[in-house]
Every structure is written in C-alpha cells, then in structure tokens.
Image 1 (cartoon, rainbow, N blue to C red):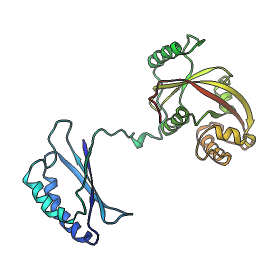
Image 2 (image 1 turned 90 degrees about the horizontal axis):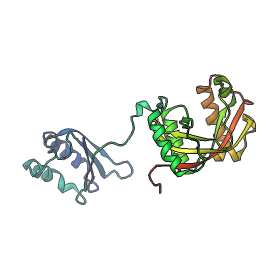
Image 3 (image 1 turned 90 degrees about the vertical axis):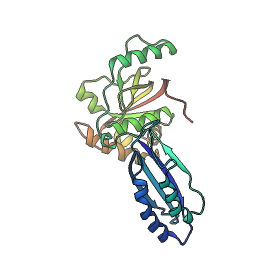
Length: 264
C-alpha cells in the first residue's frame, strides 16, 4: 500500500468553486491503475487549504497514479486554476504504527532463546554478571503501558517504579534487592534493556513522596498524578485491589545495558 499526501493551497474566496471542480475531477482519479481510495479534507485553521490523501494498492515497483495519462492533463485543467501555488506531492510506504486494537492486551511473553542470546551480549559488555539469565518482564499491565514506560526508561526519564507488596505476597515472589539485575522487554516480548536496582523501600501508599513520584517519569511527574495513575492501575490489575494505606514497594534503578537505536 502506498499513501499519497498532497496539500492543496486554494486561492482564498474560491473554496466553493474548487470543491465543485474537485467533485467533477474525482472520477479521473478513481479509475487510475492501483487506485484504492481517497479523501479530501478542508483545513480547520486554514480553511483555504485542503489535504488530499490517496491510497494506492501497489507495492514497490508496481504501477500506480496518473503517470503521463491524458486523465492527469484533464485533472490539472480542472483544478490547477484554483491553486495559490503548485502542490507538493509526497508518497509514503510501510505503516510503522501499531494495531490500536491490541493496545489493551497484555504484553507478550518473552522468548527464552531470545533472552539467552540477549543476555550473552549483555554479559560481554558488563562485568561481574551471573551466567544465569535474570528475570525478564515488561512494565505495566498492557501493551500500551509496556511500550510507553519502556520509552521513558530508555530516555532516562523513568528511574523508579512502584509495585504492590500484596502482589508479591499473593504470588509468593521475593522482593527486589539492591544490586540485582532484570531484563526489560517491550510489548512484543523482545528484550530491550538491562536495569539494575539501586534502592528498595516499602512505604504506605499515602506516604510515598514527591521525589519518588518524579522518578517514575510519568505524566507531569507530580505526586498527584502518581497517586491517580497507581490507584487506577491497582484497582484494575491487582488481585487485592487498592487501599489508601496499602504497602507499596518503591524501587529505584538504572539502565546498565541497552541495544536500542540512538535517541536525540
């Protein structure tokens, strides 16, 4: 699929005439090789500007568009008199956006073989790391959480995290310890970074302070935001739910290894 994007700068005062001419020209576009669909939207901030988007059902090297056809000459004759300047035509290929229908799904499980290979590369760069592959997990309870929070970690914005002590007890899991390392995976379960715990404390929810809230890097990084987000999260995802004085495991960490592309 190829997406064509064209900003049409129409002369002020001629919008109605342009729209009438455009409707007359649309059949010329729709009968071209590879045509799939199109839209033409009028600007909100700039009402004399229109955005034409055309989807072509074509791959690399395949024929699509007007080319040198006589239809294009007729298209120009109908529409070009209304333009303030010659429109720029740009084409776009592969869609890199995720599937919005899956954002609320749970993050995918990590593949053991991929984790082992990743850990081998990490150990080659880090000193004193055990041979055993450490625990791997994604931040949050959904794919959207995992993707967003991972980016905050990689950007250095997120250096803290919070967990319900009740969840550790429910699952009979040990609490994090200073110095231990974990592999952080993305929404698809692919390993992306190694973090090392630098500090752990257990604090009642209503006594978590502004310093820790800021370290989590989310929203405006305020304590009010932290409280609202975490209350909502534990009400939805924790088996024992939420309480204003519930014990919270506050963890601080640092990224010690990552293979992600350079960030600006």
